[in-house]
Length: 151
Image 1: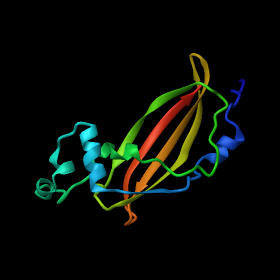
Image 2: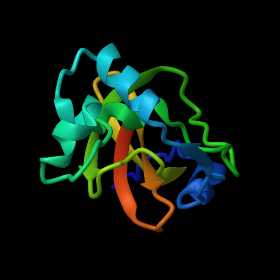
Image 3: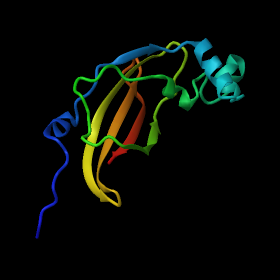
Image 4: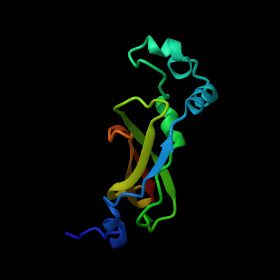
C-alpha cells in the first residue's frame, strides 16, 4: 500500500495554534449607526437608544456583521500554502455577547487546523483560521472560523 505524498510544509504545520498580535478597536456609537445604515438594517436596537433600552439588550448594540469591519493584528508567523489557487471554503460564526458603544474589542487570529485532501484537480490543502473577538472584560464576544482551500 503506497502512502500519499504530503504537500503540507513543516513551516505550515508549526504555524498551527500560533496566535497573531492583537488589534484593539474602540466601538463608537456613531460607527454602529453608520454601519447599520450602510447595510440598510433599520433595526432600532442598532440606532435608537431609547427604543434599544426597552429590549432585552438594555441599550444600543452593534449588528453581528459589525465584526467584519475588524481585522486581527499582524501575524507572528507566515501562513503560506505551497499551492497558489485559493477557494473560499466558507465561514461559521459563534456569537456570545453583544457589542456595545464604548466596548474595546481585541481581535486575534490563529491557524487552527491544516489538512490535506485529494480533489478532482489534484491535492488540496485546507486551512482553517479562527478569529477571536474579546471585549475589555475578557469576555469572548464572537468567534469566526473560516476555511480556505488551496490547490
